[in-house]
Length: 97
Image 1 (cartoon, rainbow, N blue to C red):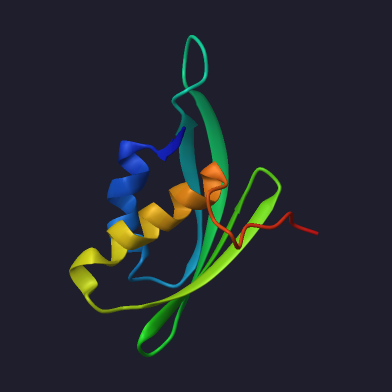
Image 2 (cartoon, helix red, strand yellow; image 1 turned 180 degrees about the vertical axis):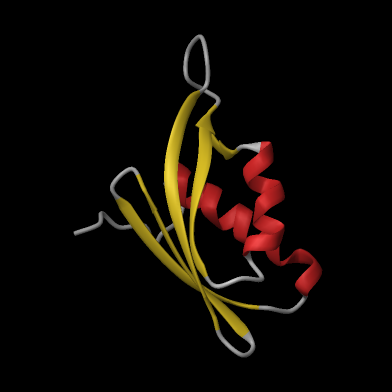
């Protein structure tokens, strides 16, 4: 199972309010002996009422547009989506060209 690191989760609360490209660190906690790091990028475009996300990791590329409201749960919704992408549990996951 792949999860965001605790530091990455904390940073995500600020990053979802900013435009830009951010480097993320995830870990594979089901790896034998010790967690394996996974490096990824998240590109965020701010729109008036939505944010557009583009996530790249391990040869996959996923995009999503989310409403900014409710703002208090935005970072949590983004974190859940990122982890679903990383674990390959989204129907929309595809291999990057």
